[in-house]
Image (cartoon, rainbow, N blue to C red):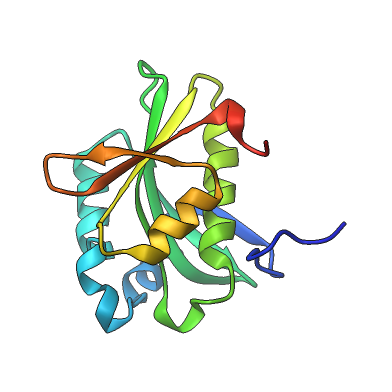
Length: 159
């Protein structure tokens, strides 16, 4: 079996954020030019404590935390929202973001009640646009904050 274009050679896992990996998640850094594209992990973890529907995940490769992802998938809704993804600046360009999204989509699909997944990103974030389009996310327009909303029907994964 050959690996998909842009996928990491390293297996990636998503792990709940807890005492054992929280400090590593908080130590992750974005490249300076990416600072405005995503909320800090400190802010995201504080949001997760306040929002019972937020599901924070450490992105782990080769036994090390290399990124952070957060989504929500309320039981009473058939749509999940991935609203945070970041890969440490020292780990970028290795396909880890792509592998993390693939794992998140697998985890969300296993929940059983979700039919579609939405994601938002800054218009200037071309890397995010390409990444999500590669999974089949279709741009639907801007949200109230001026971010692009893209939607993926889970039945379309892999087609």
